[in-house]
Length: 393
Image (cartoon, rainbow, N blue to C red; front, side, top):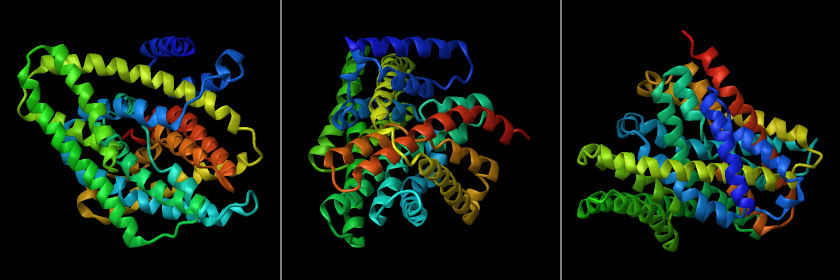
């Protein structure tokens, strides 16, 4: 019953969104979730790492991936791939080192602990930001880059997080070659598996012309390729993302069936809205218990550092290469930075770390939750006014 009530609350908020331009739905749901945590009826609810990773993530990833415009992805594949791989590694290194250097007056953190916080804050989750960007600026390129990066960097962040978590909780040593080997195996293996099954399903839709059955096949693809990849210790996130992207490519190239896309959109839009309502309300309920701690000032500093370093990497790398320099100017660099708010994947990583438990984990959890909440509230509220101010000619 509590989950049905949460979905009903989500319905009310999304209905309001239809009537108000650029309404920050995730922020409202999150704040409501924190408020609900004080009502005894909802205190028994919890969001687990299994729930986020195996139930919520596959449909969110798939619905975004198969709707990602094939043309937009191809045109910006270089920038998207760089930001979602090398860009994330650079962010973790620079942000982690800066957090460690500034931590002493506020909290006691090891260098690995600082890197853990950085790894939690690297995956981006634009949610409704992409639609706000399109509405406020009319710049679909930025929306494509933001969404494409967020889809791929989820897989990268998990690999980095796993290595750092092993060092923090189990005392494992770090080896650059073993890390790169694991990263390439997990990431490329997951991507290739997703491409293969995305292509197979794009062909399989021709075996039936009943749209409902074809939608069923998309459900099998979204959850099936995710769990198959995880079974072989590959990235389920990247498998699902590239399965959706491959399906989109094939639909655009060889399957001229607008009718099928309409059916898929109708189904996956409902699933996406339902999952988003549940997950942000549950994040608010779950995070409330970690938000009473004495280092909120440092959490704000961490949030600001994450923005500064992200801007430095985006602007620096796009200006370094002439081809990218012509695509992304300083205004767009600022908007790409601001649009990289934290969300679902960051919370999954926090809960993953919580399940391991050890040493300074409690402080990392509190700092992580606080920085994610600040990011969701401040960045989602600021996207529309900032884009109107920055992008105006």
